[in-house]
Image 1 (tube, rainbow, N blue to C red):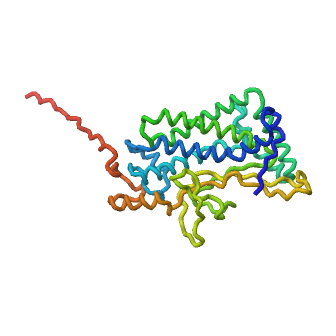
Image 2: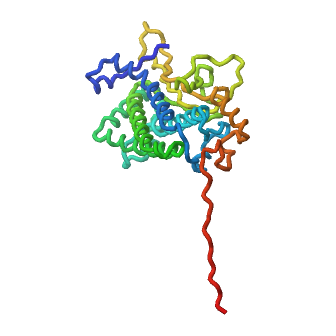
Length: 332
């Protein structure tokens, strides 16, 4: 599928780069972002010496096998969950808002501009595209825009780190912060330029059981391969009844060009997929192996079912209250 971006204003912003280089970098940027997220999960979440707090474990999907052990399969499932959590927060905190940031003085601007975009789009997609492009160009290139974006990104970094840090060795926390800062910076910069496109670019990461979205065919949400850190090359069997456990990365797509912007000589533009998403299924090798490990050890199959830190004996026993109570003898 042919996939080109318009970039009418980006060339002016980056005069040292050719249009071809900008287009090429735009097409691979989301794949690079996915790779950075997977690298974060595989590098810093190898060991889990301390049991995560109950509030963090409560966020783990109930159908995901327990990944609190130290086996290879447990680590791979934990890696997938960490990547899912990071991608989810980036999708909703960076890719979701109309404006990433206009500063505290404009804290209600996002909902206002989103509403305006929706109403203009109902009347004319062409006018909405032009209005949106000009609005975002002014917002993202004004004085202090980069500083405001960095400030907003700092809040996202803190939220992501707090969501995942307890699933790693406490010694890894500083490395996790550095890696998350790098990921959020790349995500914010990538999305800032993506939103300047004339055609709408959208990132979608639906809830696990949400089947009302448009990305339900086999070409979307390919299976995650822990060995390569990317999608598997093998398509699912035609009669496969596999169950989706986690969405690991969102689907990112560009809408089709408006007919007024298309040339008669060109093949009609139907939009394009910038990223097909990524998902973990119940037939993945680490999931199957982990379920067998838990069954052999006589442990509950799911993290949320564990009531004591006994998963493969990796967690220290709880500290008991050994305080002795002394009483003074009564006077006769």
